[in-house]
Length: 596
Ligand code: GDP
Ligand code: MG
Image 1 (cartoon, rainbow, N blue to C red):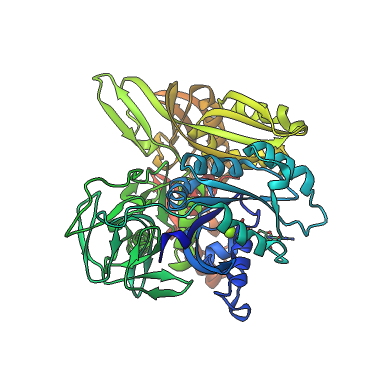
Image 2 (image 1 turned 45 degrees about the vertical axis):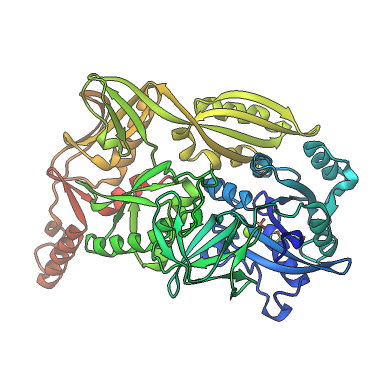
């Protein structure tokens, strides 16, 4: 295809502003998906995505569109909408010349609208501002057109107005994509360079890699090279998604499509990497490649210990399709055999956990999520602590914790509540801007550890659901952090250790001790529950002793009833874990680790 008739674009939006619905409508308007084949959110393929209404993996689709008698090829690249997947979003954007900035006409600009806009600007994309859902009775198109125009520096009349639901304005939008976006530029005779913006594992075909060709051409049967690893593969198939895969005789400058090499693991075909030909390889890769960095860690343990091999196989399978998932085996005295798993963020954690439970029928306990600390010990060596129980007990020079830059957008009436929450979470305000008279954008620098637990829920409840949040990694800081251990009768329970700020250690210790006193049944002896920093006890509760004589209740008489009781007691014991001499029911661990 002649690059002059290609237009590569993506739709960027805050979650729920209607990106998937608009994409569906475009597929229909351009005739690539017939109305009768149309199911809602055609591009969101995974079940979990469909149910949660979020897009996790981006997909590309080619659509024909005619303007003034000329046939164009529009490549629409669907980007993930959630903050956990910023890197994937940025690579999808880098594959485009333009972006449709979609804003709900009843909501206005939200935190992820801004985050995505900034990413698009960093990639020098042409932005087409569009208000969606103008069919809604609550829509305020004039007001939000002004807000949007003000944000990106255009006239309010330049903001297009559409409804992905009714289709109103969608054809005009397709025309504007052709008119406003530049055609791709690239050197046809140069060595091939294509950027990978997505990589998906398919049970039947192996890894399907989505690429944008920047220079040169890729042809089927040729040998290719991944520029970050120099790994070589044969191109078994190359083609375009329209939206079903359609093999072609090659992909050249400006084209977007897929390739299949027979590799079985997305790690061998990484998002952001550059593909080149093996015979005439490019000298320089396209840049922008980065390994995905896990930010949040949690221990995952099967509730039934015999499920451990199932969990291991399940993680191995998920990894094929998720280059950002990392894990290593871990043992816990309290929870048995499991894994320490690294995630991009909390949504990523939830998705992985849900897939493990749903697709592999596993019942799991997960420990409270934590971040990775860089602990400098007295001999100046650095320890990277991903599991609180590994925090050294000896002398420590300093502890570095990861930080985030957060943007919150909310109605101005909630400024006070938001400031209070952020203060509690050790946040420092960086600035505040009014987007309009009633809405503000607030910027904070916060420890990541303070937002992985319960922060978003708190923000939502303090703002009656109106606040939106976006964050990105922002270096680290030295902080006064300590490890709090929980001891049962003097024995440390590793799964309950936590790293907290010094000022919050006492609150954590009392909270856990009180919780456990209620959850652990009385034993035949007194059981002290203690919270400690090193050898210093900071909180203490007691479980009083009972004389456990179940048979006494049976008045000596009924033998079969006695036997039943004894059996019942034995069964109950199976689900007990021993911590020293203390019997702790499995449920107590689960309940103590759950967040409410
Ligand atoms: P995404 O998260 O940006 O992909 O948003 P979706 O496309 O999943 O849409 C979120 C919700 O808004 C869904 O319930 C849609 O049915 C609804 N929606 C999307 N576009 C429109 C529209 O133009 N008008 C109305 N009334 N509802 C819409
Ligand atoms: Mg969607």
